[in-house]
Image 1 (cartoon, rainbow, N blue to C red):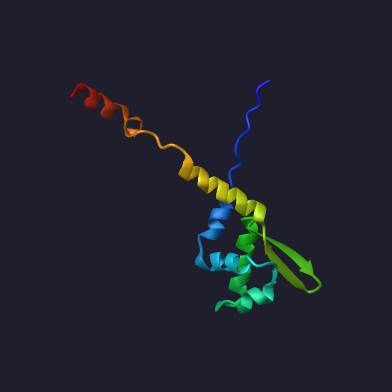
Image 2: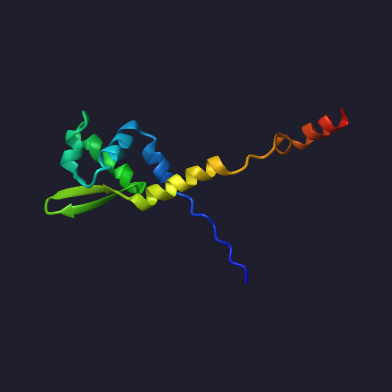
Length: 115
């Protein structure tokens, strides 16, 4: 029996979450460890609702994990998703590109062969 194992693709939400500079800065700010939402908001010159929305997008992309501790919510990086994302990006770089001839349309290849 042959079992084919497909490489898991990172969710599109992770790419969407990283598309914004402020969200990338929040991810960078969380590198040392968990931070409260208040600590995160204090680091940026945006309104609290804007930071809250950025954190929601990061959660939707599974890049951060939120944990309530009393009345505060602490955020930390979800390193497993980030590792999967990095592996996916490395796969883009390390796969062998198709030759130029294979990428050309069939009609263009015929013209080249006839010349």
